[in-house]
Length: 217
Ligand SMILES: NC(=O)c1ccc[n+]([C@@H]2O[C@H](COP(=O)([O-])OP(=O)(O)OC[C@H]3O[C@@H](n4cnc5c(N)ncnc54)[C@H](OP(=O)(O)O)[C@@H]3O)[C@@H](O)[C@H]2O)c1
Image 1 (cartoon, rainbow, N blue to C red):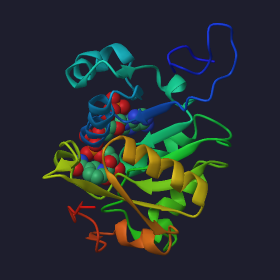
Image 2 (cartoon, protein in one colour):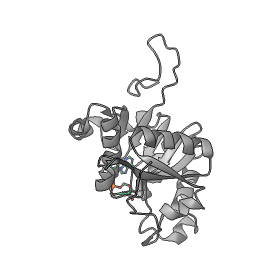
Image 3 (tube, rainbow, N blue to C red):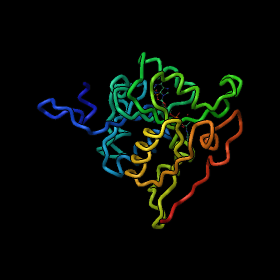
Image 4 (cartoon, rainbow, N blue to C red):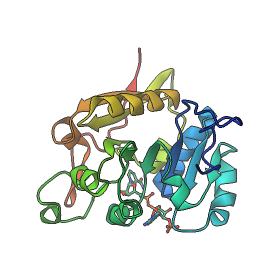
């Protein structure tokens, strides 16, 4: 078990239930998500194709909860936020033969990708297929990184994050994470149903992309 994925085991190696998180891709959107973890004091590993030392200074500016690690170790987290360019998802997916037991949070947008290359499917379906065995949740993709990076507490309300998945349990797990990070998650339903509202398709955007909503309750 990689030690960098904090909290997986106690010193007496007894398994504990703490969920581990990583963000693969530490550019604009990866850093925005990492900032939300740092703000909430929840540890998150971050990785790219570069060695972790090269991410250290940026991670340090976000907060101590953001831990650069090797990509291979980041892929051992329970919940993995995918924050790479859409076309890089196959490189990441190819790092493991089987993703059973993992939740992949698809924060990518396939803007500019020919819909024919996706067989007319939503881009998340292509990602779900590439990460064989994983449970896929679309989320954290509908806002510009500069907005997502801001404090989600807006005038006493909480910034909305849309969640879509074909499976309810992982959707619920990611919704809980979003709540812990201070957001107001809204479950849209399955990927090809409500999830279609938060997808890029070719060079157009679905209706809910860029809608910066705040929920008051
Ligand atoms: N920017 C936004 O406002 C925004 C908003 C919503 C969604 N998105 C989506 O989020 C995704 C990332 O966009 P971005 O703007 O954050 O891009 P970005 O700033 O270019 O960052 C991309 C990150 O992915 C890493 N990366 C690339 N290939 C990789 C691989 N094979 N394995 C591991 N890491 C890899 C890069 O690091 P290395 O080069 O060091 O590997 C870099 O840290 C895209 O799918 C985009 O559509 C972006």
